[in-house]
Image (cartoon, rainbow, N blue to C red; front, side, top):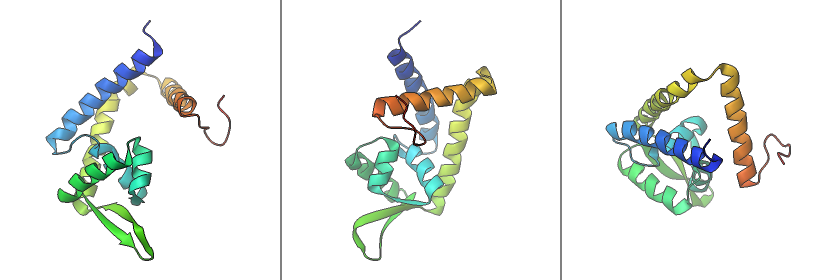
Length: 146
């Protein structure tokens, strides 16, 4: 059996290629699908929060957001009393693209879900969450994972 790091890397690479291939057909570039998904779930966030959630550098998030703003997918604005942070939200076009991204993710996950029972899917999610917490040295649901 392959090493854990290789299987994680290989699975992520194939999944990402498939998502980006489909996202490219609707005019999206790398990084944009996960930002659209995040903003669709939270309505609005600042660049630092987006970068943290998406596991990317703030400067990278800024570049992606600039392209998304130019494409009419997001709008950035200041809140009253907060001149330092720009808050990002989806435009109508961005919400439409976010819906398409959800469909892309669902189609890409479908073969995995078809190959696993519901119990195995739940176990996989739990194990991936535990692995993520271990590698980022965080805890899940307030309990120590170590």
